[in-house]
Image 1 (cartoon, rainbow, N blue to C red):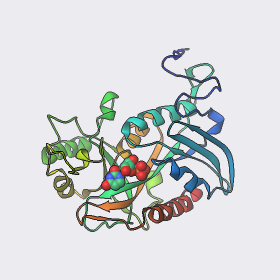
Image 2 (cartoon, rainbow, N blue to C red):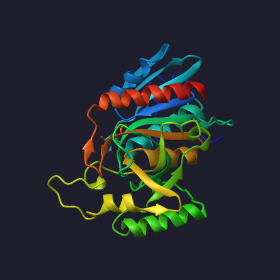
Image 3 (spheres, protein in one colour):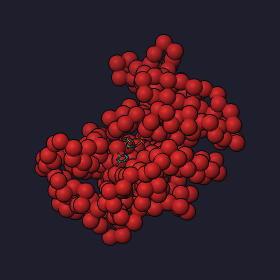
Image 4 (cartoon, rainbow, N blue to C red):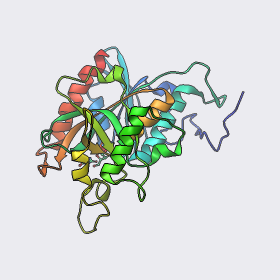
Length: 291
Ligand code: R1P
Ligand code: URA
């Protein structure tokens, strides 16, 4: 039996995994991720019962029940680098025996649903609208550190995307992974569907200019105009592709739903971001309870 070394799989003196500070029994099989640590309590206030509350750095977790459904809600903080930590540690909690330091014989598939905020790249997807990402398309480089593969259609899409957006050569190779169809099918009414692009930053990597010039100033227009068959890019943010990519490699069922807070085409911003997020939380929890 292969034992994973203490430098690779770090367990604290509570018997909990390093960054998330969670023990296996403190995690539910259905996990809601949110970027903002303040959003954890905004979700868990709808729980009928809370069993555990843990916090370490920006990673806050509340585990409890909505009706009979056991759910953990966990903040990831901002960005794909944090998602590397979150997805690997969630998977370790589910699929590695932390005492034996070995991979379990029977693996568990978690359901991971991100409830986030996002920027719209289409004029017809307004602020306060909801988007469920059919695919996560990463320009953030994370998945390139892991062995991964794509089918022929995905490869063609990525080639055309890199050529169209000119996100090649000086940039990393874009990567793509799909949402879980089994989860996505529940998020249809009231949701726009399309490709969610994940960026390694909020300003330059999303085409925002404050004081610095950009190497790809037409990026937003190029993302908006990209089509591959029926697929178009609906929105961008900073976590989805990393969740989909790692989730797929690890065998978990993932979906990312986002409320639009900024429309980059109409140049509008939501008038009440908190209320917009609240509506998405209520809608998503109603669906998740029934899955
Ligand atoms: C940027 O403002 C943050 O908001 C979005 C982006 O993905 C990034 O994390 O998501 P959250 O609202 O979930 O943090
Ligand atoms: N989150 C992002 O990453 N970008 C936006 O424009 C809005 C929210």
